[in-house]
Image 1: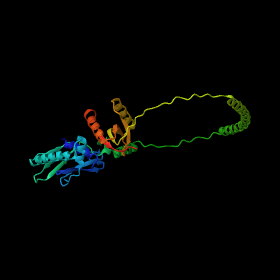
Image 2: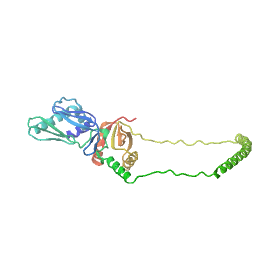
Image 3: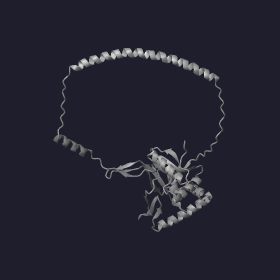
Image 4: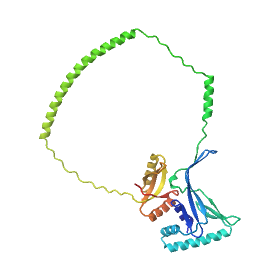
Length: 311
């Protein structure tokens, strides 16, 4: 039984996953951070910790194992108890327990449990597709000093240009005004004549059109009905293939997955504005998990399950 795989699946959706009689893995959301020394931007994430004081069986892990392996709840509890007994024996022998994609647990010299998390996976689903990036240092002050130095060496002076007024322009303006007034009077007379002619022609054309419409007979044959069969994906369990800042890249991913035979589609943007693409959506959780394991094995090991009701 791959206990760490089941725990990893549950950490995406729950803040506490308890292993009965052993301890609990906890997650806490951490906002995005910036390292001032390296100029590195870190995306929001879930920090994983371990608390050996929380050992009461809440049934979450056993129910999940029972659903996935299709076994009774009591059988799942027995399998967990057997595995816990084995884990405790390894710890007492001084061995380090490695939970894949979660962290490592070991006893220190005082006999206390030490947990060292690994960050191979970001369990914060809202940050899917976001990775760390480094930005170059901004050197605005250096550029400002260089510009100031150039201004001191090459001063720039602006002198206004003086132009002499020319008297003949006054006479040209007076002539232009006279011509404009004369043309305006003639233009008004011509426009009035055209409008009267157009109104007479429009009334005549309207009368002829009305008489032709009254004499016309229309025979319209009904068009045959068209039946379209459209299959709409439903379900709250979505296997996410990726999330993209640019929607055009999201469309390209959908086209690529459809070419590979998947029923891919866009399922909207998350609160960070990333457009998400799903391989498919499922009504049942077991069907979605089965499909997710197959996709991780054959197509994309970074695919993950989003439990969300779409509008």
